[in-house]
Image 1: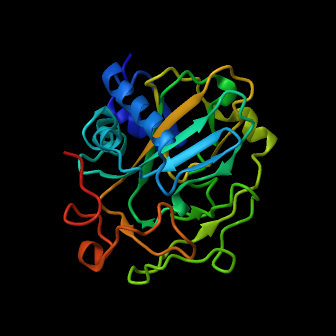
Image 2: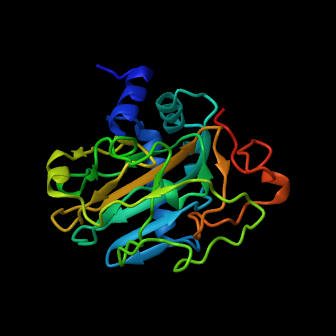
Length: 280
């Protein structure tokens, strides 16, 4: 039975993450796979590769931007957010080669982004078969109270390599001083998910074209891909509601502030005139 828009919203609000099987058809999937291969061969300045783990974001690839703005991924995002006027933020390529032991540590995405207010989600598309061992794992309900200590707070980001918290003293803030300072409060999550959370975590094996949708403030993690005989490629597309406003974090944001100008975002609004166009 297919999920309805109301089902999408209910799952997102209740659990912070859910799966949509066969979200992307074969044509769109092939385009995304080609774009992923191209990005790894010629990464953007934000591309990183270490020990069989490759990531790149906001690559500028036209196929990925079309998929993010015009394809079925955009419609899923609009239905999950209950808003046809969602804004495409950026795409993020994530690849773990077969045998890659690199783990994705416990974290939430929201506080890495320079966005306050409204809501931000990811639509994570599997480009290959993903077994349960290599699957994303989600701390159910961690995007909102009571697990989140205060409504509207964001989980403070950590450095993936060391596990250290981002803060204004150890992480140089963004140079985009014209943006208003973020008014968010931050909560501190544990470095590792507790045993009981691991036992009750939400996770799904995926076939190519399956999607996992999650709130940007949902805590999640993943094991390495060392138990798998195949590569694990995925692309996450990020979306924001029109209520979101660009804001200056106490640390460097991701992606960096390379697009923002007084003309495009004088009050931080995510408008079609400025930085983030809406979904057609």
